[in-house]
Amino acid sequence: MNSNMNMAVGAFLGTVFVLMSVSIASEGIFHAEVPEKEGYAIVAEASEAPAAEEAVAATPIAVLLASADATAGEGVFKKCASCHTDTKGGANKVGPNLYGLVDRPIASHEGFSYSAAMTEFSKGGTELWTWDHLNAFLTAPKKHIPGTAMGFAGIKKDDERANLILYLHTMADAPVALPDPAATN
Image (cartoon, helix red, strand yellow):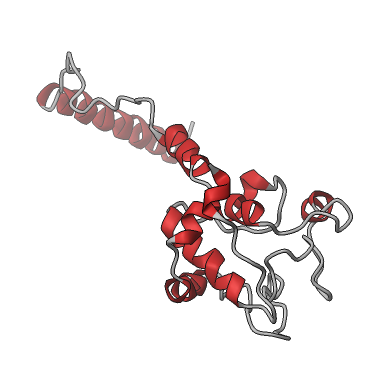
């Protein structure tokens, strides 16, 4: 071997020796014992979410609509306005125009290309956007119609959802009659 090779190997071995010495010394100085008990334990508990979802289903939409406010629903519609319009003859956006939605056949707005899941759910245009369908769909769109392209998470609060549905009900040439809350009992 030549002297340059000897120097390179010596430098490498010297560097390894220094790094190992520093590692061993720092571990001895800064050694931390493993705690007997974790400082912050994360405990997963059963949530109340299923009970909350059952409560949503337990309150009929007719009862919710009896105390709903269409003006407040117009404010809730702002969540929808980035993807939908609500004016007569309004353009489709990412989602279809919602004017005249209540009791309109599902997946039927002209000029809008619906997802396969929505088209299948509409049963060839025979299924309507009833009060119950709107309530369930707006609670959790992907749960009510699995595979829908609508990426909205849903409106969990009963009053907000009822206000929105009542507002959408007013966006029509001839709004359909509201359901009778007494008929649900």
